Length: 156
Image (cartoon, rainbow, N blue to C red; front, side, top):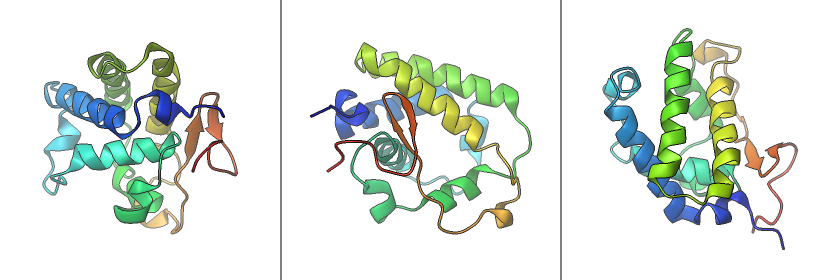
């Protein structure tokens, strides 16, 4: 049985360490802290982010079963205009957070690829919140990239 990226990255605990590390780095950064400064930030943002990332990389459907769906996530992130510098900075901080969270070295490249891809997917068309269709499926990412048409292999 092949180990999923989620399992290799430490499962729920690994994703939580990563989410906390990335959030700490973002909050300490003048540019990257801006998206987190708006009112209405969920008090369990890091926990929800860890569940989302975990589900995306082969973990259990904790996010979509109890926290939200992909349509809500995309609507939350679109309509903010171009922000290439912010995207690049958030990706840089994610790469540093992978080290901070002490995730296994072999998982860092695929996780960084996922985060970079996901960051730019949020910038895609359409850019208006009300144009985002209902029922979007959370994309899944494996060792070799985007998994199309199915959950990653070996998902329970």
